[in-house]
Length: 115
Image 1 (cartoon, helix red, strand yellow):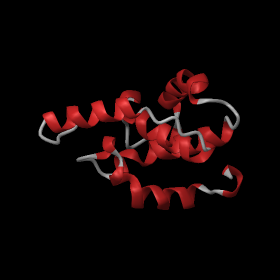
Image 2 (cartoon, helix red, strand yellow):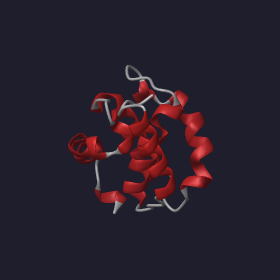
Image 3 (tube, helix red, strand yellow):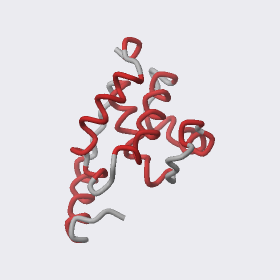
Image 4 (cartoon, helix red, strand yellow):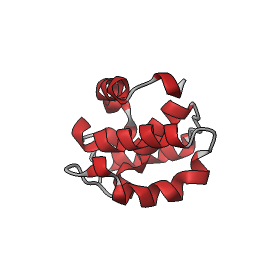
């Protein structure tokens, strides 16, 4: 349950597991850490709501997120990580396998590089 998890535990888990995510190829954990924390905290705050109900609010909130300082990143560059952390803390896993497959095909066509 989300109430039993702390950011310290989640931070440790994400640091060990982020590299398995398709959006993480060629990037380091520190680039995603603020996004994971934001998704974790947002998921706890919005328990019971669906991602598609809150995404626009989270997009706006990302620009003001205090933890973002030093790491930066536009919403477009971090939203998959935010959603990943959101899904993990809320237990909502609406995986769009078609989109993930498209992302992987696009990444491979660029020689494994991300944008």
